Length: 439
Image (cartoon, rainbow, N blue to C red; front, side):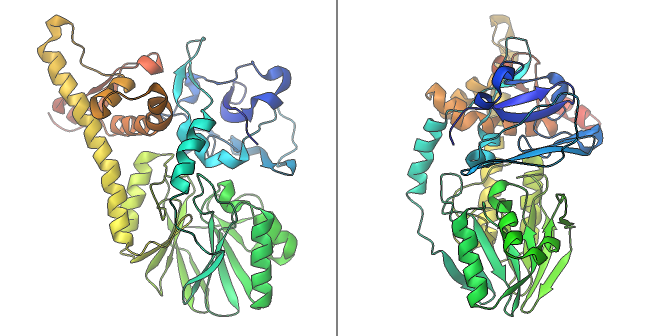
């Protein structure tokens, strides 16, 4: 399914939701693509603080208003299926998402000005990204559908290779006895449920626990198929921020089977509910989407993501079993690479803004400004690039860095048109004052 995806702000409930414009009928232009400033409690408008009384787990898919579940729409190749509450509510809309690009959606939307003077978001250029990512995909090593990656861990691919899923979602059977733990359930394609069902049957393996790293569809999509195959599994599904009928996972919770002791580690940032799982017998960590086997992951909340990377590093695990890509043989090295990559980008952007502030203060009489727009920051760091590369490849991640620097009281900005917004480095004394330190 390929179509433009928009973000919609529903004034009645103060919820940000995506929907597929071509299916929205006559409501297509009623606020499509706009986000009210009221919704921008958090810097990028993706996640409200829990105490706001209005909470949404991500920019798409699931909507919660005052802790009341509204609707979840599943988009599959076989058609559309609605799950969730049937309760009537004031402004009744159907929300649609492009199922194949759930994770990608949040990283490619950029703030743009609207005709109503609000912040807004624009559909991403899917063909541009598909061309870029397909090239990366072609360089990946081939992974077998089923492989014993250690004496107690079996990896089963989800059958959903692609630009954002690398070789596909990795699902893992953990343990050595008849009873095992399953980590993640892939995207819900028939090839995965057929593969794992056959393997469980021939090896006479039963599942004691099904642990989900986070809520994204390429990790939870196979849950209905598992339950359809074996109804007893309905009581064995575990997830942080659980959906209806699922069991909660808490930080430090232990799951044990023969040959495997698995400890849950709360590591938000990629998503608000993200969990990693530590296999104590191997000193290995199932890293979910926080750290991938190839390339870098994306973060919904960069500040919390960086904290989680450091928390993961403090565990001292040697091996990483990622949700996408090959086994990470040197997890400490990979985590350091991830942290240095993000911190390096912060330093580059802060340096560019600091240089501009110093220059602007010294030449103020000549009209040199002290701040830079996002495009000017890109120019200062990377030189001149095609506008489409800036808008689609760099802007989303760089905006996250700017918002993190703002939260860290290192950077400020002047309100206004998002594209022309001036970002500027704070002087040290102003940073101290903002943080509550003595000057």
